[in-house]
Length: 169
Image (cartoon, rainbow, N blue to C red; front, top):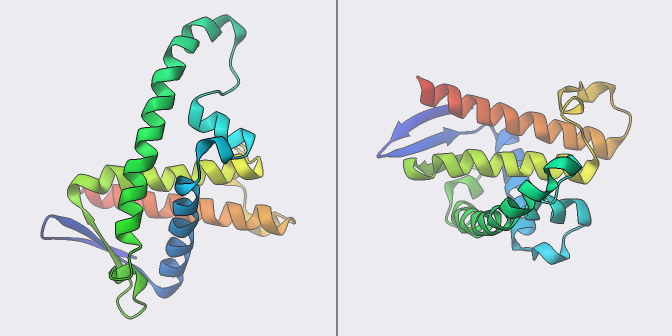
């Protein structure tokens, strides 16, 4: 993976395997964003609506914020879906194996990083992966679905870290 800036855009040059992994993650995330929140499995629905388990003593304070959080997250999903549609279009160089790069407008870099994090979090929620388990060595995991999820989480974190490292100079 190599990152450079060109014409007010961040250009991420990917190896073929990295390209395939990123495409797979982005296509899955696009399907997720296209799905109505009401149709999501309960843990994902709770995540997007801000209904996480909490300390009962804080519940009344948090209930006031829940509606704002829910509206904000729903709006973010549609904004991020629009970006995904652009990056996954047939004309996108990411979809072309001979090119294998992604162009991100500088104004969209924060959304790209958040989008990658959305995929990491939704994978963790779907598979019941804790924060501690995200650091597990995938080679030591016997369950194939869990192993694949951890690999994807690691790859997306690697991509996030490379982008942030490049941007910080």
